[in-house]
Amino acid sequence: MPFYQMLCITAHYNEYKPIRELVQRTVQHVWDRGGVVRRLNSWGTKTLPQRMRRHKQYHQIGDYWTLDFDASPRALRSLNGIMRGDPSVVRWTVLKLGDKAENIVQPPNKTTPR
Image: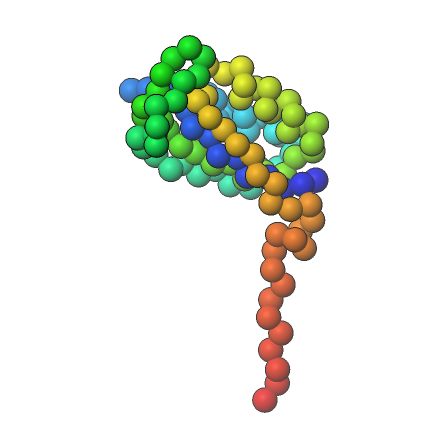
């Protein structure tokens, strides 16, 4: 299974309930399709670099978060469908970090005896 990292910008709400539900739905989607979630990281609320339009609304402030996960390409396509349809998602992108564990984890350096 390939290793991916998703960066998501969601619309800012006064409460974090919509964002929490989106993250829970995303993680559950990866788990239901046999994937593994490695890390979930919130970058907090930030001003967007430019005014962004999504679902007929303009956004100037967004909440950033990342998700590192292993999933099949089919699960990734269905995850993109979830992100596309959710009205709270402003932007998202998924980066493929590697196919194998050898590509992701660096082997330890070999030491020479004295």
